[in-house]
Figure: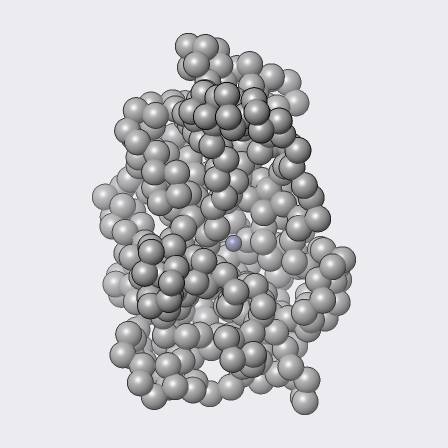
Length: 364
Ligand SMILES: [Zn+2]
Ligand SMILES: [Zn+2]
């Protein structure tokens, strides 16, 4: 099959012919129709420390089930599906405590199935399936728990952005932070994830959704998606403005959607005493955060919490997001700002590097 392969860190992807295995027990082969390009893909591609290569990335995919292995009960050939990059087993220590992303984390980041194998190969060489899906390809082989069946009337291109952006952003608000109606929210960074956090805050009934991003087109987009107050961090003092806009109290919740340690710290300053800062974006693994815990944690009872993939259980949250979309409470269509064939994937990555648009969705 055709796939976009990363052969070495910080190089262009190459469209190549690779082999994908037949589905084994509990596995599902999906003909991928669409896959969005997410910032996490770009982070892996551009990081000099990426060592699990060659790799097929892409983790925001939809498609149609083509074949199933023995014992598969969740889906059947012909079913349209959203592919979850973080399938939960449902039975482990974490799953039984409603922390499904912690179950899946080890699986997703290794580029291999739990048994240490990959279904992808080129000649005699193993090819990794990056970030749990390998969606920049004509086919993907996934665990049946990663196959979330969706109604046949939901367009597969529109549904693809649910796979990562919407689950991560809406989940960060509803699952991780549990923002209550009337709360005040600050969102720092307005790419696909940040805009999805804005959408989640609107669903939660936040009374004030303050957003901050240096790119003017992204600030404009955030206003269209429900932001109430728009800040330019190159011109505005985000912390001071957050206090002004909340009657001198500070925001109840701050979300870092850019994976920036500096923004996490800004969130700790901008939140009120007892408020919550949520780290949604992924900083590089080598960065560290320095704070004065006596001030930020003890005396002010502020909270700083991590958020992996919106704390989502995809079998629960994908149908929930589709339901909100049907009610007109979540906008999926306008998240997609470019559509390209798989062969133009490097152009889509360049758009992301230059902060052009919110989401490029590939046709595979
Ligand atoms: Zn589990
Ligand atoms: Zn993603």
